[in-house]
Length: 193
Image 1 (cartoon, one colour):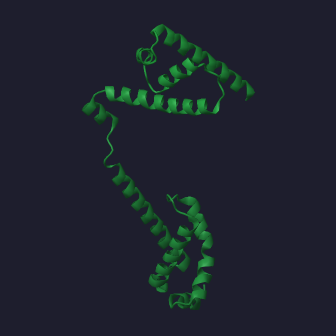
Image 2 (cartoon, one colour; image 1 turned 90 degrees about the vertical axis):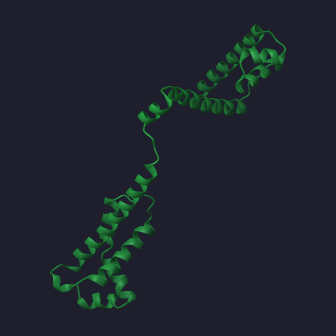
């Protein structure tokens, strides 16, 4: 590579800098495919490459027996390593407050796990079921609709019976009819698709 191009870019010639950047752009593409830097867009990679090129131009010494291309490659590679180290340090810092499962069991007892595993899926299932019910056309009687509404709110049969002035047996029968209508609807729904 002509020394004049290096000197011109080092002295602030934007055209010379751009020529060098284009010459070493394939190196950037290889590095981009070799390393994953979280949340890095094309513009970020290009900016890092330009910063590394600028640093390489300022610190390169021709008399050291290393070509400029090799020197630039080491500068940009070290810069990427530095970014990766920073990301890993941030990740470790974020994980500092995390507690292992063993520590959680030791401090709260084994029952905390049962509580987490039973409550969350039920909540998700209830949300999905609510959405499905809102969009479907199942015809319930007025009593069935009331029973189903109470049940979806988390009420037990004895509370529903008391609130609707019914026997528990009547509530259970109404609940079973609701369940059968939903199953029938879902069976028809799955056959459509």
